[in-house]
Image 1 (cartoon, rainbow, N blue to C red):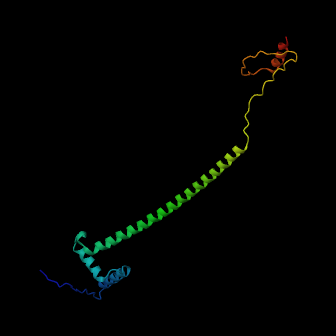
Image 2 (image 1 turned 30 degrees about the horizontal axis):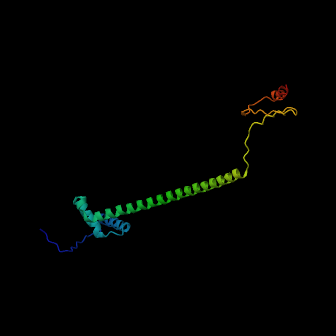
Image 3 (image 1 turned 120 degrees about the horizontal axis):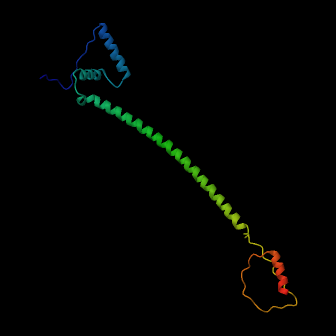
Length: 166
């Protein structure tokens, strides 16, 4: 088996051919877009892919994937916080509106209660029936049980005076 020291440096040579120069240009462009990666990282990724090593064994890509997932989680948490803030602001506004309406209704009820207690209560009842005037010369000492008055026609009431005289 081939033994390497702890740190092995291998060199890559790009020849002045068109294919090598175009590959070098692509590598430089790629590394400019991703400044956190080095040429060494890029070479290792290419070797992993070329040698068909399973994703689960690749050490460097897991940390990149984890960082990507953590970034997505942070974005989602910010979005949820924004939604909660808007929701609570909306509900707070609705609560304030309800409290204002309750206060107005309470004031109106108090005003109505004052109006009711200040006004005299008027009961509507039928007008009392006229009582026959007693004749001056007749004194009636007999008492009869008092019955509640019934509605009597005023004409009959006047005629009953004359009947009492007979």
